[in-house]
Length: 173
Image (tube, one colour):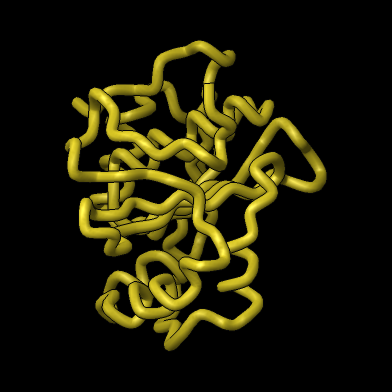
C-alpha cells in the first residue's frame, strides 16, 4: 500500500483519465495558473471575498503538505494539467477534527476525506456560503448524517463524521 502522499491512481469512482495525488513543490506554477483561471464567482464562493491571487505563503502551504495535519490533494488530467484541489487542515485545539476545502470535484472531496480518516481525523468541518447550493448539495449528498449550523453572515458550518479507517468513502448519489 502506498503512503497517502504518494497515491496516484484512478479509482472505481473516478474517471480513468483523472489522477489524484498530493500537491508538491513542483506544482506551484500550475497551482498559481489554475487559481488565475478560476472565475470571480468561484473565488468568492471558496474564499468569501473576491480574492485576486494566492499569496506565496498559501502556495507554499499547499505544495508542502505534511500528510498528517495538513494535506492538499490535486486532480490532474491524463495530460498532467491541474483541474482542482482539496485540502484538510487539522484543528489545533481538537486533533480529531479538520477543516476541509475543495475547488472542483466529488472525487477530490472523497479522496481528501479518506486521507483525513487515515491520519486519525474523525470529523471534517467546512464553512460554506449559504448561497453556494452546489457545494452544500454535494456535502449533504455525500454525508447525509451531517450536522449544520448557520453561523450568520450567510455562512453555514457543516460538520460530518468520517467513520473509522476502513469505512468506505461515500458514493455520489
